[in-house]
Image (cartoon, rainbow over all chains, first blue to last red):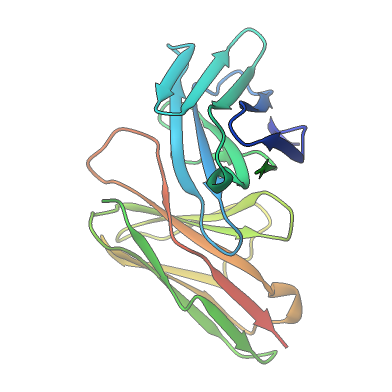
Length: 112
Length: 117
């Protein structure tokens, strides 16, 4: 039972344009969400997070949007850069729970 | 800050032998460490949660006698794959949480590629 889903396994975006990565979840108990970036043969790197009391969080080129009613979150990267090419995982958890539930990942390729 | 190291980065062993993987938080104390496994083109699968000074909590379907976890200090956790077989070949990643923060971020090590021949 995949509680966190990333329905797009891959995405290609032109350099300088906006990259939008999507994530859906089914567990209504989730109230904290994170995005991680992963290069091949490396561990994931934390990018940005959002609590369910917010609907938007911004950090530099990265913005995460949360739509609780739709159980959907998205990560916007603008402008996209070649170094952004990686696999992006969204993850979710609930208050008091140490564990993160990860999505299946989206491979983002930035085209120069 | 929040650097997590893993050693070794890559190991090849023969079937039937045991392999130990170390996970260290270099610049912070981590009361909780996590061990994940990743198959090619798949998500991170949590294997176990490790708390300093206590027994690890294993996820359903993970054999605790095969994957021994020891969290001896606030900066070190080890995963030992006992009597390894080719099906244990995978990418193993550890992560750690700050002991003094209430946030949920986990900081990941670079991973260990295990190949069992």
